[in-house]
Image (cartoon, rainbow, N blue to C red; front, side, top):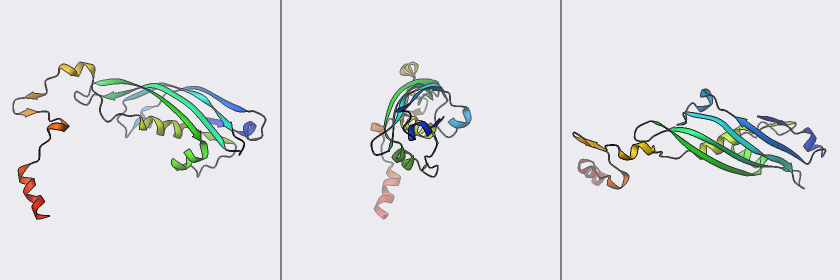
Length: 159
């Protein structure tokens, strides 16, 4: 998602308006828990302040499809992210500064990084509320129920 910065950097335009919809393909989602991420709405602008720093303001909205933590059934998880800050600092944080800002800028790494930070650690499907959490010889142990294994507790004394 590249934008031409020539007119902004030469003070011809005051801002670059952004109003795009982007769908991530399966290859981009590889290595994440996201099953599907289509029709992500990206709205905002890129401006230049008095110190000639590029400032980006974005609102990123969409619905990511994630697996349920209990049943692995796909669950829709809506997100709404606001990004506001200095472009050069954001690119430094993403280690994208090698691609020096000259005449064009790809904002997709900034968008992707912010979406990745919105992925929750646990998603439970509304249908999974009535699911059986125990069976013949097994039961789901929740975080607050975790107990220490007495055999492994003996090893702590050795250390």
